Length: 182
Image 1 (spheres, helix red, strand yellow):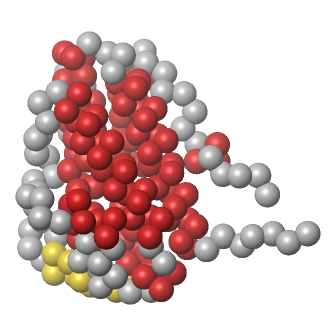
Image 2 (cartoon, rainbow, N blue to C red; image 1 turned 135 degrees about the vertical axis):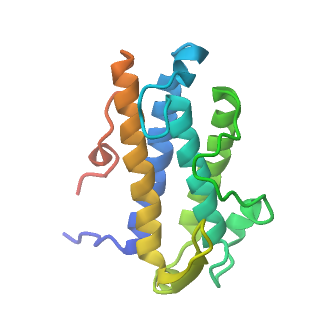
């Protein structure tokens, strides 16, 4: 019996699938709350469920725009090229859950298409970028991508806690639920 040894590219694609799956679950759970409950300051780092979900979306956009500068120039990232560059990680550009949900679906589509396009060779590249304060860095692309997905997971964990405290069950959240049995 031959078993497939997962590659880094496989891992990127798996994380993109997990990102979309979890966002669908979290946004559906959040939508069961009244608008004022979604916006209520619950003492989280970004205040509310809406504030935390917005932070994830803003950070995702920042990273996707950085990833768009990769020499491979993945066409899947064309939709984020030329969009305004956000520098404030606490920005609240979405006034309600509906507009934030539409943007999240757009981002998840871009992320999935880009993850499908990434090659093993792309992952070996060191990406030069500037952080939101303008400081310059050059770091391994694969590690930056893992940071990107880990950041989403970290803050979605905060949102699931806020939702649980509001008596909303998000359901299963484990990545292992998506991994095929070997």
